[in-house]
Length: 214
Ligand SMILES: C[S@@+](CC[C@H](N)C(=O)[O-])C[C@H]1O[C@@H](n2cnc3c(N)ncnc32)[C@H](O)[C@@H]1O
Image (tube, rainbow, N blue to C red; front, side):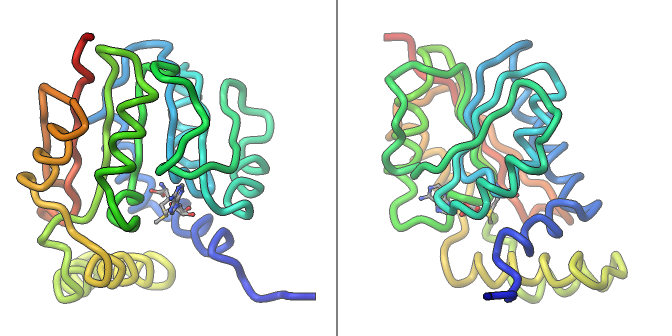
């Protein structure tokens, strides 16, 4: 039997740190979904954002490419109504055009080979007038910046390790500037672009856009 901790084990711990929880709450405030939205959380991991949105009265489907993440998300959402999870790929979603009011992705698009493909899929599955919201590392998220923030906040354990790992992932994959995000949103047919930098003076870029009416 394999007793090695999985990425789902690790990420469940990450999502339960006060720092990560604060980031997801700040993201939900930035998203500002209209009441009772039907929302898709892509790359949901163990499902903290999806649970948060469901508790706020939205109906949420969380999708993740990793079956262990989906199992964990289902387990952690036991007893919470309005949220379901399934396996899926942001680059090829199974949903019809215009199925949702909003599609969200935190710390996912920067990991994939072509974020434009993922963002186009998210835009496709929302209704005209619906919103797409994402969070990714900003160009400020370097290993040095993460270590300095961890020192300043006196983080240890998984709180420190996850912040440093996030910076490592950003350095080895991609960071998105406001101009990068604006161009990606425009290419996906999303207007009314808004963005803001958050987390320790701007390590994360949060961006939002609205699907044009046909
Ligand atoms: C860094 S974790 C972020 C989890 C969660 N969104 C959060 O912010 O806490 C990235 C997640 O994206 C998932 N993922 C990576 N590529 C994906 C893809 N192409 N489609 C769907 N999920 C993907 C991973 O399995 C993982 O759960």
